[in-house]
Image (cartoon, rainbow, N blue to C red):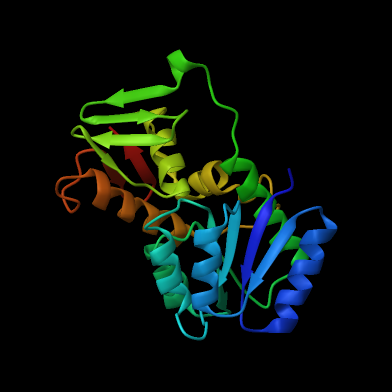
Length: 232
């Protein structure tokens, strides 16, 4: 089955170009030009990925993303104007998995989308090794469910991948750049230099808010100042 993508932008020429390029790679593409239409389509379809512009008529992209997160963990890529750092960060705060800036190279965009799709569809590991447990946290990689103090919590796709990676590497310190490679696929798969370390910081902060009793005094995800993060 082809990947089913929703592209949301009020600039019709941009939408037309992205749609054509993705369809050339065998993907099925729906389009929307405002936030209300995007939400209606997201509720009605089981998309593999949603590409969502920040600035939209009727409902802004960050609000659309936040509402999508109430009923779906579909990967969301926010699109923001070049240099709008706050828009990037707000998009991640509201549950986006990644962002791209305009103007973008269509080949780079497609590479990033394909990397996200590959990570969203992983073969299920054997049952005995699919479950991780550490203190009050239980994680099932097969069902992609997480329980903290016996209560199920909702994580986005990237938050889940980040927590699973930490739980499989307890005590090891990882630099932000290494986490960008392991979880987001920067450098190794996309051949894009760098990536944005703030992407990691925002996701770690959101993850702490969901699993820590007191996020400002974490007991699971620790910061190694000047180096990165570790789980312990």
